Length: 156
Image 1: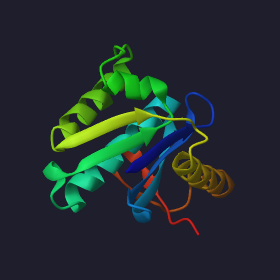
Image 2 (image 1 turned 45 degrees about the horizontal axis):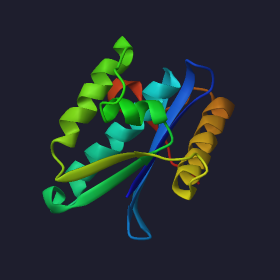
Image 3 (image 1 turned 60 degrees about the vertical axis):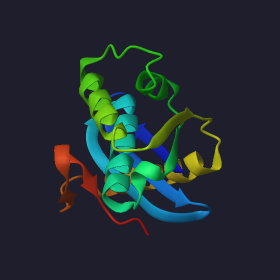
């Protein structure tokens, strides 16, 4: 199971994306990144992409596993599942990237869930800690820059 979330303070505004991967009740990976200025929907997609990329690179027997990915973004899940059209140019490319990554999985289910779901609440809490930390420290400090200007920092 994977729980993902994206957050933006303002839309667009400072944003972060994160995910937690579970095998049973055990967390096997979690990651939270700062996206600089982005929309909430872009942050949601980025969280999903990061989670899927990690799974592809790190989980054995991926084509045989059934993976459930939970997001509190009904819009993004419905776009990925083909129930809604992607109208935003900015989201079109990230939607296509998710679809390309999806092909690496045997069974991958994208599920829209409430933001009150425990896994979503845990990711959301870490995103708020990250955004608070970035707000306090400013972006002048040294951070490890990832693709597309994302920043990852250790959360205590």
